[in-house]
Image (cartoon, rainbow, N blue to C red; front, top):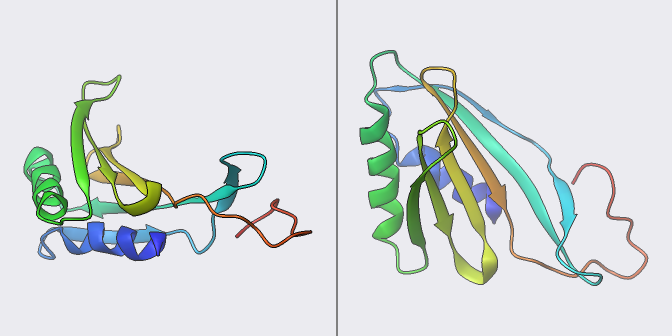
Length: 126
């Protein structure tokens, strides 16, 4: 489910400016509590030189703001770059930000919390 929302972020970018896409095939599990975990992963992509990064982020913001199941917050990161936080159903969270490298967008994603079957080791790749 979380990777499908990552795909939705990429799909909200104009295909004419979209470059290489690197979506992690696996992620890791992070603890939510002693009983539950959340999957963490991400997708990174490049856009063509000269792309207006603020417009690109606004396109993503508009796409998710139009959805009933998401809220969007926009803020500045420590480097004064705009960052979007997309909050979805049941605690799903994605952070979309322009990284220091020109034309590079990073998306960090975190699934809703869930319980693993008893005896399942949460370490390693998921």
